[in-house]
Length: 193
Picture 1 (cartoon, rainbow, N blue to C red):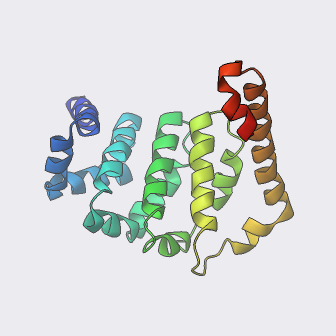
Picture 2 (picture 1 turned 180 degrees about the vertical axis):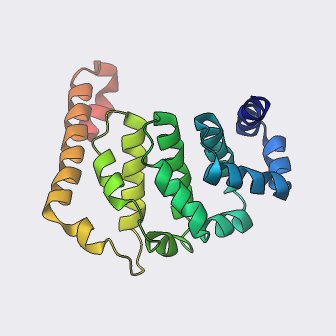
């Protein structure tokens, strides 16, 4: 219980206070312990807080490189993307995306066995808006790389393209409907559309 609340407090502190974040980046044993908790703990709260903390650790190139090349660590993230706990799922997806944003790591990460590309596709239709956005960002990161990766064909499959097209159309219709109800003082936005 003490460990759980300590990690919750740590996650809140590094989220809100830059000095705490800097101090964390200088504490290699704490970072290693956090990685260990993410990969081995069965406690949902510890896993969630570990994901949040490690997301901030990825600000340091040394740590992001080590995490992005650690297959055991990546597999634990992949496994957490099967969690039924929305917070664990969302924070694991955010952590994966922040690692994939590193152009030196993304090709390696995509070639790790059991990369959850199908999960990303499925989550494009998730009821949770934040999860849909994170899944869409993951797909965008994958579609933007120029190195060889195993998902090139999946990105061009007609069914997948139809899903992306559907997402774009729904959002465009929402925007147009929203703008139709704007008061005349927002005419510049209406004209732009």
